[in-house]
Length: 219
Image (cartoon, rainbow, N blue to C red):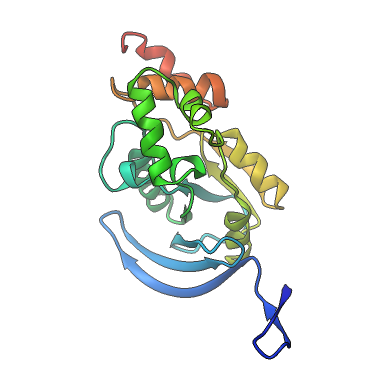
């Protein structure tokens, strides 16, 4: 915790890291979760952990889900994010316990909604998702998972079975002291609208997407 100068010249404590703010029941079409809301004092983002059952401390089935308005809310087929979120929620319910950490401020791999839409416009003209970000002078991936690790620690989670195809999420959790007992694939059948995007994620961002080999017929 750092300090800042108050209006009377006195030093007042300034919070850092994530703080649990609220815990509320959240019935969903998948099952009844506890929605645990957090404030990230370092970035100002508001996050939520959807907790199902009693996950315990070790080998907790977990998803770190980056906010994606177009996929999560609008059903965009440009990516597989909405389907991955739904699959993760179903998986923890089927498991009987687990955590889905929903990370705000991660839109477009951290470039924001308008940045993502600009990148999508360039992709429609022929650039891939990496080339589009670079052309806009934006980072290829600006996400940070420190808040996610802090949320898991607050929930008492020491190790996870991580539902992700992205090796960087595993590396980030390990860096922040959360053990990854297993990386569980979260493979969504591709469609004509997202196959190029998914192939770029595999070839240029090292995502583990072996199921793409079976859909060579998609352009």
